[in-house]
Image (cartoon, rainbow, N blue to C red; front, side):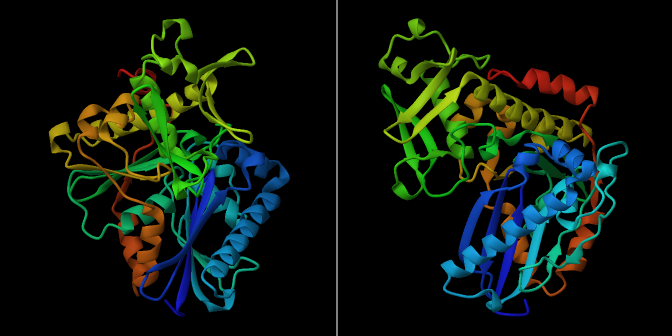
Length: 407
């Protein structure tokens, strides 16, 4: 690290996260916000199509400006100026990385889905004090964000599965010698996208919901009045609804006439659609519609099926799996009962789950501290074996099975 402070950016499809660290790697400020490219598409496919149609420069500028604004927010929090920052590093999935560069994305829209630029590179962003280093890509569907997560783990254990839960759910399985890597299109539900009351894991977000007798209790970041649900809040809200008999195995909110407890008050009809209303006051309504619950099912089904198929492809038997490391949009550790209730993963995996907070940012922080980090990252990428899942019969069958909550 050249100066005393450095910036790290996790460039998610739905949310951006940023961290300011000192010369020892200690976080002195952290912030997040929604990716400003969302109006051009909730998913990267739509954004890339817009880029090809002539909106590439706009998409690039929106993302670059967001990085500059986040950088300003962080140095202000820490009582510093941008002039105190001497290093910047960023990582994102293939589409977001190419859009940041203003590079051609057409090759990611058709087979064989190979990015025009894979190598790590130094990129000047107007408004940032120094050029940023953008982490390398593995393939057209596995990006620098997963590379960063894995680089943050200095001594991986054979039989470890890493899952970066987010809009572009990326996964890596270490067999002791090499990494099997893949990704699934989970959609933005885990990051608060396509959920009216969704929000990033910041102050005011509900981080957990649990059932207590005939009440749904909310835990809010910062002990503030609730303003929305982050990823972990969404998972536990659905798990609590399942436990309370408000949501059946197929993911359907039940008929209020079938509920014999006072929990029935959490079921509402809005615009002809049943919904689960967790909280409301004069300004805020935290409700999950039936359609939003369906969006969550699509997201969790993709993660479940992807993890299952990756282990099968690597020919790793369930008993050889040592740990399942979850990081990304969930934000906080969750009880195994909640993960099991929503069937986020096969049950034998849930028993081995551990949580890694801010895995991408942790890996980027390590990158900033290591003098030969770029070379080490290059060797790591060289040990990765890509396994495309999207559209394969094996994944499609597993995905359909994984949509229910009683897989």
